Length: 615
Image (cartoon, helix red, strand yellow):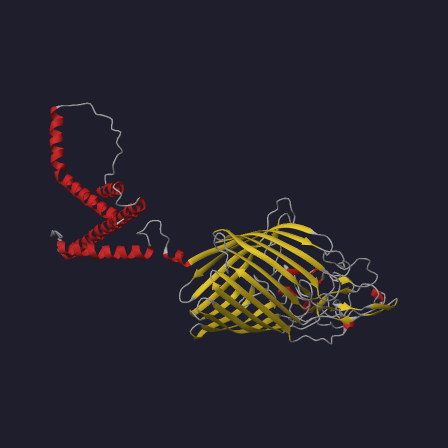
């Protein structure tokens, strides 16, 4: 290799010497050629040779490429650099000439004004002044060119370099398979009631409660698309914005089922999924406001849906205590419900007064987390954390006695019902409806909403151990445990609407409500073997785990929406695998089998087969 390079160098030196000699004798040869042409006129001949560039530098570079000294890519870069420098030099010379001319005109005008009439002057600008003007203007133009990047055509301006776009796309097949034995009658969809018109619970109503499908299998093709932007605003400030698809505004799904919401190739909706400001004065501290990613570390989806967006305010900090050991802390306040500006009751009050407007019943989540992460060499790492979450005013409240004449009437605690829910939490009726002649003594027209029967203040312990002895193959063990410290196991079963067992009819109008069997804790354990991140072709991993989540261990609105089709009061296992089929493109498969822990019989198996890509 070294011999070939020395030969190439000798060839290049001979070539440079030849070109220099040719440049010296070219005028003489040209003159002799001209003399001969005057002596003998010949018809012009058609040349088939490739025309050369009029620029000597370009020709020299092309010859060096032909001799093998330079590659075509290197030659292209040299030619582009020469063109850029020539452009800047021409621009500088042009501006210098223009400004020098303007300066001369100003000097002449000043001299004319100071001279008596009839006097004639000739303006003289010394050559040294002209040179100085040119140098100053050249420096000014070069500085402006570097700042605005117009000295390099095709290069983005400086502000554009501080914006980064990212996104991902997923195509999914979802198969939903129900075994026999599920209770379709009592699979009540409380979310459908609370987000629509109240349901008449009286025996006079011939219609069943709205229910979830728990008997008919489904096959669906779905997709998820997201596009985001992060912008550095200088001085530690940044902002982010992301758009995502989705069938509705559910906080726990960004999936869109093909041919859903109308079908016939109807267009789909686009939602604002992230919108936040972030201030990070130093690397270890950050403050965020807006709609952001989950600011709390969670290695599993036991407590939080993985892509859940948090609205509100968060602070995060970390500090390396000793080499390889870092402590971290997070905290924040997040509104989960804000009272409608015009919320109220339009029925006349008992004294025939004006319509009643309801006081605010805003709901908040206050949370904090403390943890430690440690890494010992490259073969072993672990991370543990403890978190406390306080959901304020999420528990339902029984209303004051109220009259309800139709489904459009309201009572004063209707706002305490959840604005979104999945399934699993325990519910109670909210309205204390007055029995009178309008509802046949309470036997008809019992239009009810339902609220959560429990308060929620869960404590969560999380941990992860990473064994990397065979890097890039890792063995990762994840675990999480949740306990609702506000759980009340003594709640009266006669006021509950679900999660009961042992109910039976005593008389035609009397029932024994049964026993409350709600749960206050949950846990998840999983193991993953393979590459930690699937980024390249043939990267792979496999995983398996077991999940148990009691009915009232966590607010069901925010947990995973895939296992058991979402919610709490579920137990079961999951297995899956990921395989890279290209750069940042991978296939994924996951099988989830779930059963109800308590209450009515319910079981479901769910299969996901995904094609994922990100940039």
